[in-house]
Amino acid sequence: MTGSFIGIPWLFEGPYDGSERHAIAHESTEAFNETVEEYAIQTDNPTSVDDLSPTARTLVENAIDGETQSSGADGWTSYSATFCQERMPLCDEYEERPRDFTYGERLSAQEQYDVIETDDGLSLLKTGSESIGTPGPFGGDTKIVFGFLAFLPAAGALFFATVGCRESNPKSVVVLAAYGFSLTTIGIAEPFLQLYYDFSFTDVELLSVALPLLSWASLVTSVVYSFYLFLISEFSR
Image 1: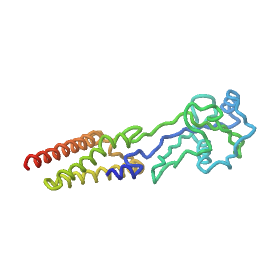
Image 2 (image 1 turned 180 degrees about the horizontal axis):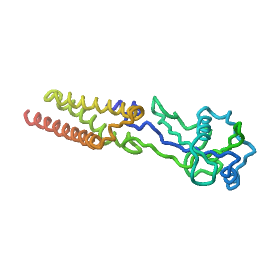
Image 3 (image 1 turned 180 degrees about the vertical axis):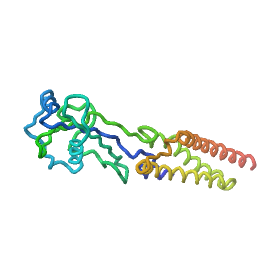
Image 4 (image 1 turned 60 degrees about the horizontal axis):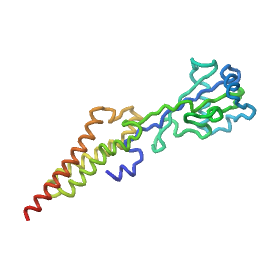
């Protein structure tokens, strides 16, 4: 169990690393001209869309064909792209953010805007305005939280049961081993279930509370019972 927690990077992780909105405005629009003037954006050295990476080119094309924004100056269309966690071996969205553009918050105008040249002329692409996080089932640091609350206590319970109860109560070792195997299987399958079936074990409130409680109860019981057997063996000498 401990080995899988360390060696399987996507264990109990959400499959996605958030979404990014890409807004674009053609040079014939009010949005393009107002933004270029307001932020003194240089348009004499644009980046050709053909020079972009395949992912960046696809994002530009999708933004051009995207939804028309109802707020702000006329002319913006936008497209939101979802990106997978780098640790995921499979991905049904974009694998990573293209390095052609800058993402994040509190960006300068030079970082946030890119002038792109297409067959239809110049367009202004805006990125980094806002990252929409898509955390895993336990929030941001899902692996650390769930590892502390459920996974590592279950591993500790199995360890103490194996050391202290292997001979006197072998059934408890089998039960804890089965529980640990089930927990590991759920952790491995969790992000893939979210990817392909939009289902998460830990979105079920009963499980998200019951699994940590069961793990800690198992750990406490194993420690107490092992200590009890130790005292019995010492006093019986």
